[in-house]
Length: 160
Image 1 (cartoon, helix red, strand yellow):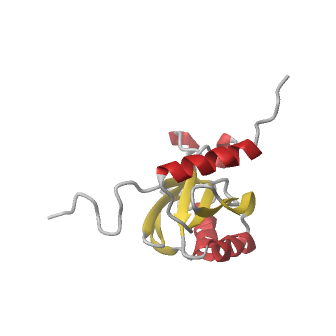
Image 2: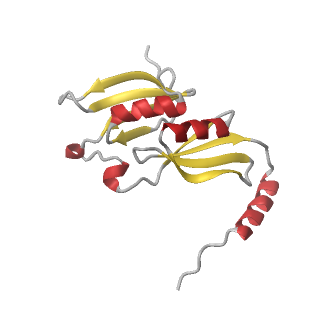
Image 3: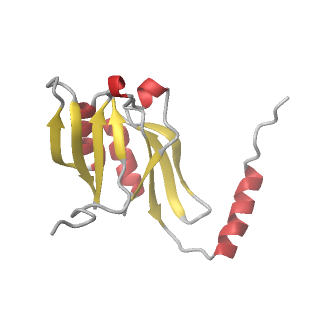
């Protein structure tokens, strides 16, 4: 009997649309140590209709842009409001590895008020990746106090 949630999958699985999905797989291998699980070419023989990679213990599905079907990636849309989050044992090491592979810094690594060492990268294909190592557990009261202190230091810009 088939499993309702296939082996290696979680309840929620990111599925990325990318202009240049084959190149993105190469980047994700180099930047995040991804392992390619499968790929299926489209009828045109050029684009990927579907592919799967594994990063850590999580599957990420991806495909090329198919604008003729309404499927567009971040480059075609002018960016993405979505970030893919990765927890790792050594965020500094993975951050440097991803930068060396071609990612750019969207938010530098820093120790955050919620207990993570955290930063955000932008991959060459327009997807945002937040990367963290959890450093300390905080109670809700401790986190609220730390958040208030952090936000006091970072006031929003004044508008006219």
